[in-house]
Length: 200
Length: 157
Image 1: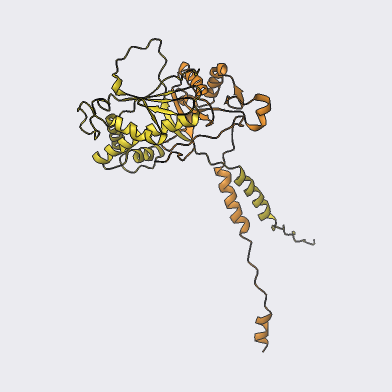
Image 2: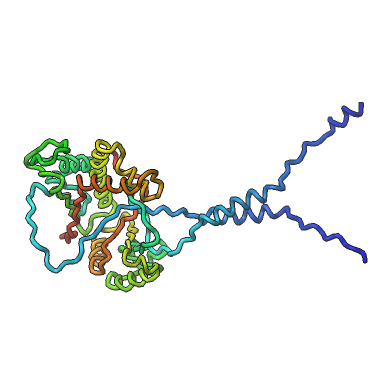
């Protein structure tokens, strides 16, 4: 019985094949990174109970169909919205808010508990501007919450919140959650969305 | 003498490439694992607006609604008005309810009560279309929404 040696498989092209596959997956890969601004819509109610809110406690941001922004009856650039919202929320007009550092202007909001921000938009407003406005308003809340949590607990509110969400938080998570709740109560996010107007 | 001659005539030693396939395979497996093949075929334009005050989306409990102008290859057929897409097809605002409950049944039952609706809306869309969608969502009692955005911020501080 003559034993033939098995011919060796030429593996030289293995690398080429692997490269080909590699390039295919490189091209098709989209590492998903869905992030966004979370909102809760108001639940559907048949009859809205009339709520008495003083006009000075509402900060109205109106965006028209030309994407111009009117905040608190002033034509404003998008860059100035954040600061305007911060000084509105931080005003503390009735003096009951001992952590507010605002101007205590009696014609602006009483305290952060009562302060409401409303965004009104036209049906023809572009979504880009709409999101920019929303983003700036959330930024205003985050700025104030960061300031307070820095003062009370020595950490940044947004950093700890995102660390807990991604599971990277080191330390006692429950206690941190309670602290976050406390901060949220200091500046409750009261952002209401009015229905879009029909443009003429 | 011959000792020295030998060295002079010596060729450059070839680089050993035997481990190259292994390296490439390693990379290949990495990309195979992280790849998520796109589930939905995009029928609408998707250039998301930018925002930086964002939260992460929990994938397992989300349903997506896409909105925007039809993409360039569908433009002739469907025009340039903003349209809504759920799953793989265009959806009319009135059949949104059906399409959404269908999408919801694909989630695991424990999480169906906690659905978050991810709104992927093109930045050139009118807010009116969004408003119609939100109104429908309120009817359906799916009140948790998230406006999916791209990272970054155009606004200069």
